[in-house]
Image 1 (tube, rainbow, N blue to C red):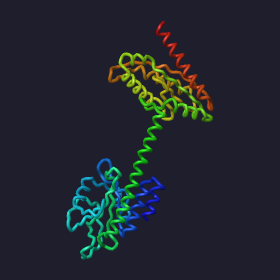
Image 2: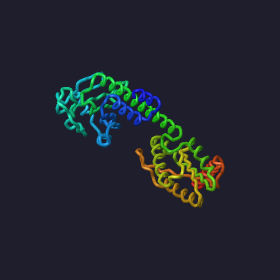
Image 3: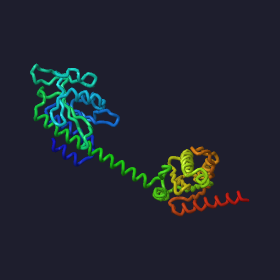
Image 4: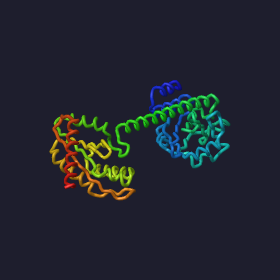
Length: 344
């Protein structure tokens, strides 16, 4: 059974399945009817995540929480039986379980000196290589009705060591996966606003352009007078203006529309629509221009910027790169036209 657990450690990073095999192996090897394994959580509680025993026992124990302070009480009342194993003798510490045990087994006890009593307990502390506690392994209801022998404790400690290794493997895998997800997100998203960047726009845009029997609309947006915000109030004020504008845009686009930041104050929205995409784009353009008519309040004061919007529409499949250039050219034409009107 220990060999089976060892193979599982190297074959799978599924922590739940591995820990289930640990408690199953403890019960099968040690001669106890019940084994439970708890993980230490960041909030200071131990949570029972795996139980081997009867259905009633599993239902009573799985998911229960014990605060770390209760474990400190257990450790203080226990006898050390090895590097990480503790035995609770309820004859010497008759009240240790008060307020701690959430489930007591009901079984017949004989009057022999080495009889296992209902409030006796055998625990193993699971520790990481750094020494911190990562969980607890416990057993109850010995088949022989006796306190654990030296051989049983040795087996118990071996299974506890393997459980600790499994938890450490899972933690390392989780940390690595989280770091990889952060790197992937950083490579495809704008760090300031959180929306997609140019790289992800290219990927998603070409996908949307390849959809058959639909229409693709590309909307290019450039903020007017944004440079004056940076020049007069500083780049932090400019960053806040961009954040406010993105939040406003996300309220007027649909969940199926794709928003990306492609430059300092430049954004692109890509839209797939089977129906009248022209009416949708006209409505969206009006709303986008309206977003900047309202002032933007930042930590550094009240700021006003405008928006120049350019569009391109085509039936799919189509050339996304060409659509993007067309929308960009349309946007800059509108910007120049607006600037010349203000001068005149």
